[in-house]
Image 1 (cartoon, helix red, strand yellow):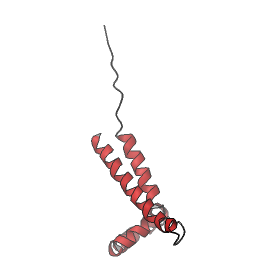
Image 2 (cartoon, rainbow, N blue to C red):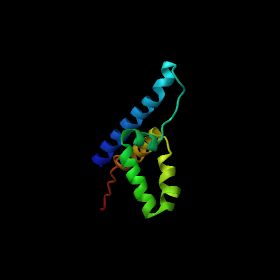
Image 3 (cartoon, rainbow, N blue to C red):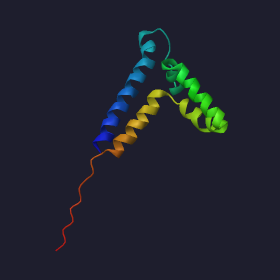
Image 4 (cartoon, rainbow, N blue to C red):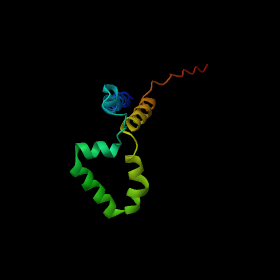
Length: 103
């Protein structure tokens, strides 16, 4: 359970950093708020790995890329990692202990 709580904290940190990166130009008055997608961040950090993954999935099953993977990668990064933080936080929550006394 502690692993899920740790993952929740890491995912929340990534979501916060992604939101700050997207909101910084708007706060300085340089541009407007633009939420970057997971694919946008992936292309920025590792363009060759994105292309290899995309090409590999398209070669194996083109329908999989178009119907499942691309819509997931179009989600804003802070939303995706925020959702992962909520899910892993829920999975790692402390359970209430139930005491059953049988006489």
